[in-house]
Length: 288
Length: 288
Image 1 (cartoon, rainbow over the protein chains, first blue to last red):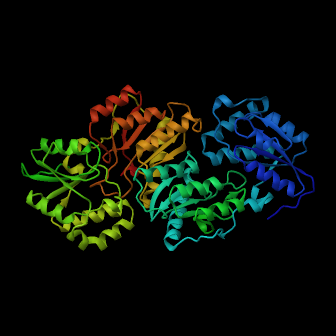
Image 2 (cartoon, rainbow over the protein chains, first blue to last red):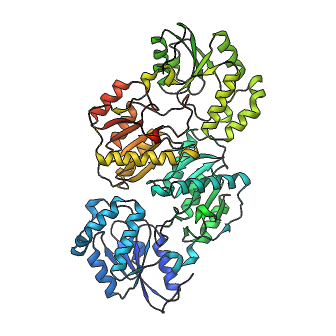
Image 3 (cartoon, rainbow over the protein chains, first blue to last red):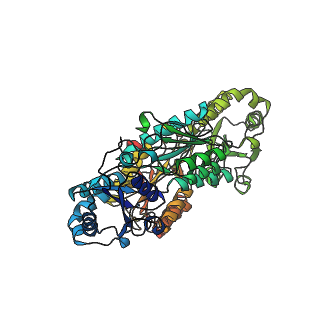
């Protein structure tokens, strides 16, 4: 559902790493709204955020963030891009953050889900509604169905189902937005390393002949954890994901329709077609 | 339970990679029984198996294996060491294997559990009882309790519980005999890459500051999958596991008591003490 908003109304875009914040800012501009980038020091890419109105903030500068967001008249905020658990040395505390600290520490002791939904509730208390990309820019969310030229086989579909079930089973552990299954055999489960690393690992295991399914068999599946707060931390794929899938010798990739971000969807589909791999948005319970 | 057996009775030891087959052969000799090594070509280490009576066999030589086992008067067989899914090019078929092929192909389409218990049933039809290491040499199986000088903290114990629950949840997917959890956060889940690779990954993520829990927090937990056939493919640890845990900056490692192999237990305990990490055998439902 696309939200109707007054033209020119600003949106605070809290930017982690990667190129996604730029695609999101473009989507905001297309809607005649004004992106205000809050670039997180150590994560955000200056080349991406400095093309728009922007402020640099450090993790821990809650007071500075709220002050700037208010000065910019932002009433809505959007999280986008990689935001890993920061090393304590990179945290810059201000008074407001200190005051919030006992609760933040509690969030940190949970998994990522808890950390993120905790941070969201703090923002909302500060007068900023946290919105999701699916509300603001549904065109960067993967639709259901086969997206490129190639289609999954019956065996691929069975592998996709198994991977979705595995991701669902890992839900309570706040881990695993992705897995690789080949011919019903689970080759890799993603945790802290990220999808690109996991794909490189399978490519390497294949080189060492420790993965022995023939090339062109197996799927990468990405899906949000069940119950995941879709206002942030949705899985994302890009052209590099497609290249990683090809290097890992898989048949293709399946991502949760309505729950996965592709910033440059035409580019990603073209990359999949060139690599002769399928790209499909899947629905079903496990992906919901 | 240690099985009583006639002195001198031979045991067929089907040897995959690593040094475990040697420790098992020693345990067989200590019981006045005769180890007959069936060294699997491409996996078994000649330096390990050639110290004992041995035959080299290729995957697929079922006829040759049964003929040799009968000539050696073996009535029991034991699987030990790494036996990965073989690349098809390394398989040498004989007539008996061809005859068994439709069933073997069916086993291959399942996970490792199904492959291994399928192979076990074929051996038993051929007159060889498949026995487990826990029956023949319980001294190489990890006992319950703290094994070295260091003890897990309350936080470590919480991480151990979470990892055991995760491994149990992955049971239906025939994957994941190991996981790394730090401060309630799942850092890594093992699939095809093996434990040493998984530990190296966490060490690398820490170097890249993508794992930000402080050094000395977190545990490696290894446990058989629930329902796993303990006659083969039990998880194993050695001194290199302890070194990997230390390099990954974890507090220690917990393994399923009664369900994990340590070939050189005194060496492994000494290595853990030197590295100042704990080593504990854990019971509980998830480990059973």
